[in-house]
Length: 210
Image (cartoon, rainbow, N blue to C red):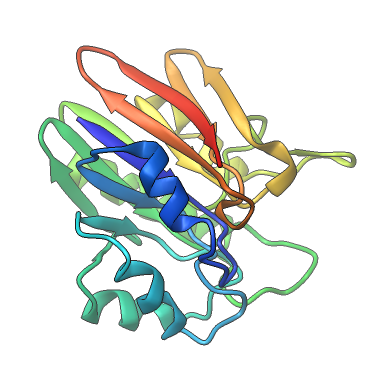
């Protein structure tokens, strides 16, 4: 199966059509948050309605909390603290981020992150588990000049997933490995960045740019 992964639009959908064309035929879109730039929540509908395939989405820390209601009432699949299976891939989602210095609208405590991931893995674990998370795990695709700023809570669970798809840290776009786990920070879709994920016998990730 083939998936287009996007993140960090911040309300700018100008590159989305070109990213779709670059991706070609896909089975679903994976969205790792910051669909809007601090709202309004309804802005997310403009993005979601650009696709004719399933859209699996979590919010980012710069999305208002009421975006969850918009996702629930839209044709998208709200993955925040939820799971959804496509083929043999079991997607689990966690939106928002660990604490930031900026007091953004959608931040979670480490305790909330750990409890949510533990519950999802207990209730939803399948043949091939993939985490769709706005925040990267600490130490992987999360580095700024000041050091690593990802979620230490997510890092505790990283090896229980075959793949972690994230965004949040714009400067840390790239693909890393944590043991047998692939971690991809897909970059800012507003700048024409994304990733193609193919799940056959193995999982492969290709960064794309338009």
